[in-house]
Amino acid sequence: MIGYAAEGGRATGSAFGSGEETDYNRSKGNAMEISVESLPQGLWEYGAALPAADYVADIIHVKDGMRIALQLRVTRMGDEVLVEGDLDVAGSLQCARCLEEFPYDFRGSFKTLYAPERRAIATRWNEVENVEFYTGSAIDITSDIRDCVLAAIPMKPLCKPECKGLCRFCGQNLNESACDCRERRAAASSGLLGEFFKKKRS
Image (tube, rainbow, N blue to C red):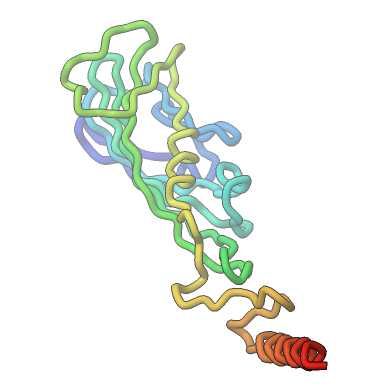
């Protein structure tokens, strides 16, 4: 169980990963919720290790047992809650050139203000770009976690910058060994060209 210090203190623990729960935060199935009604005013910090398969397995390939290392800073002022997070998860991607799977470390951060629905937001949050509205007594930050991982995926994932890719003729992975497709096609083209001119002369 996570232990909480006085207001403005720090809370650490592995309750998220172990399946234990607190009133202030809880991992519920594959939803990550923070109970606003039980969250004290002020700044709170804590870490969590979430099962990656429950949150991002449909976005990236993760091995069984992999965890999302999540560090949260939660600031409550009235009924408004600012959630700032940093996450790190080891997964894998498919190379855009050679199509081989390779390990990739997904890292990112997010910052979201959660405010009660149909209520004006205090001017102190003007610099916060991402604002979400909540109803009830809890906020769900699952989408923040998933969006953060999505944003960490490169536009053109490469196993290495110098990846040679696949031969466009035979499909050979050129990182593993070369092929003679270019030479054979060049020789074939040269032969056809020779036959053409021979027929022209005759």
